Length: 219
Image (cartoon, rainbow, N blue to C red; front, side, top):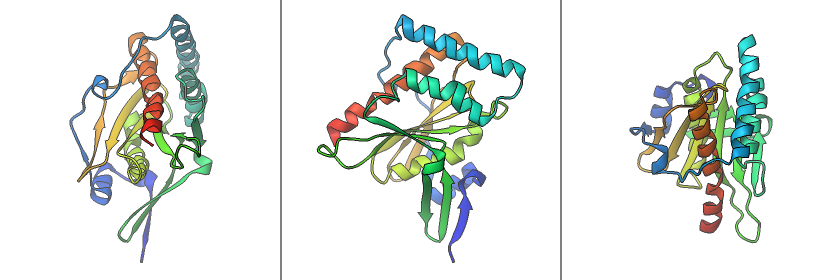
């Protein structure tokens, strides 16, 4: 009999046991991405996003839905995720199922950014970024087991994928790579509130978004 498991109930030990995912030492963003300076306009927009989120954070806990609305959505717009050929999908339309022998892991993504290539070039969607959001009172890495489960699904069709788990203030990027075994690396924490680390946050998002151009060339 197949056992159904809700991805939100998984621990990291469960992920390692069921999916055979192993953690590798975290590296630096420069190892995987080519980050570029932000323009003055982008820095000003980033500051406004930070100030808007701080205003709500000062009142109290920011809900998961508000985290998506106040920080993730404007950040992803600023860094190119709203532009063609990138397509964003929300949790109510993407069920994820990962099967391991007699176990079926089910869950729903918060946000998935895919490269929707022209049908004349390729028919496969490349996953660019998987996002798991939490409310502001929860540590971002609490969402790591869910994020890894969803990201693992993409390794059936591509060699690696980026993941992001956040509570709106703190952001943790993860790189998941296909192999024997499949591995993941947790990158250094970046932060929307701290000025310097918020600039790096936007630079990293821009660089990940631009990976879709490489994927098109490889299709």
